Length: 173
Image 1 (cartoon, rainbow, N blue to C red):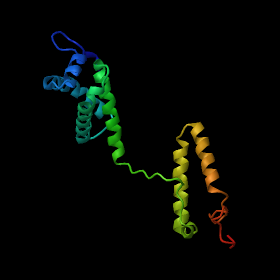
Image 2 (tube, helix red, strand yellow; image 1 turned 45 degrees about the horizontal axis):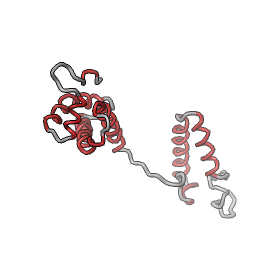
Image 3 (cartoon, rainbow, N blue to C red; image 1 turned 90 degrees about the horizontal axis):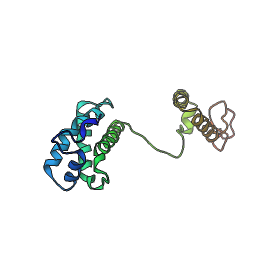
Image 4 (cartoon, rainbow, N blue to C red; image 1 turned 60 degrees about the vertical axis):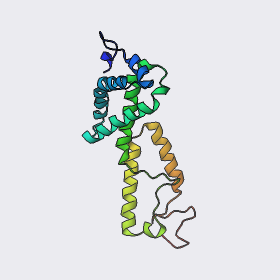
């Protein structure tokens, strides 16, 4: 992917361009963009992003390069460095639409909803989703998550309510 980026005839080597760009040379920046923009676009497209998202990833990659090029210790590695930035930005772009809520506990239905018909269906669907997700994990992680789920649920009664302090309030199930 980056084999033709080094000195080819009369062109400046990529490391020289990176050093000059870090020193503020606008012509060096323009040459870097000319040489590497296509590679960065190819990387972003490999994540199956829309054309607009590919443009955003590449633009953000160049912005990060502008902000941090002075921290690049080996200027000859700029192509690989930019590719890593583009990959990370593409992954961020993919995660942008994913909403994740982090909690300390597993999803639990309110006490009143557990025994209702809707609560039973929701509980069954949640259990199925969790089983499917756990089933896609490596075996070692499956065992860990399964043991965590079992210990967090306590013992359940037939009605779906738990005996670990959230039982049926002394009422029969």
